[in-house]
Length: 80
Image 1 (cartoon, rainbow, N blue to C red):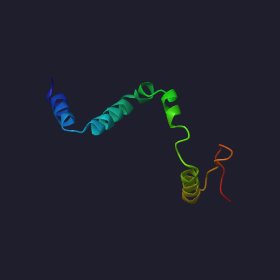
Image 2: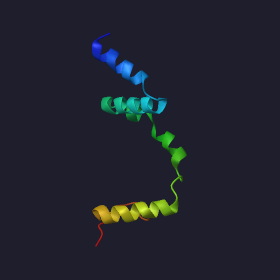
Image 3: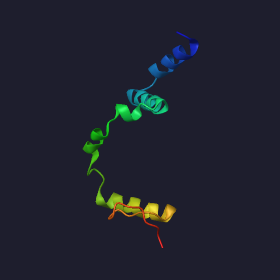
Image 4: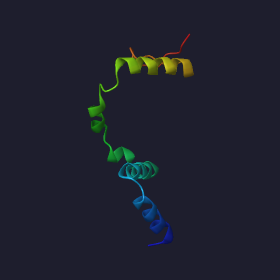
């Protein structure tokens, strides 16, 4: 095993399980494998987990930040 791989393994072993997961996700993203590793159906468990209040805050922030948001229509509209 070359030095770079060995050093990577040594550093990864020092990380918490959560940090190791972040490293894995980053590596999957770099290789283009992230979408294959996390199919869209896995996201369904997150549906409905954001409160209406938080959605409203997000909408206002988007409108103030870039002038585009429309939660009711599911489309982007320009703020006038």
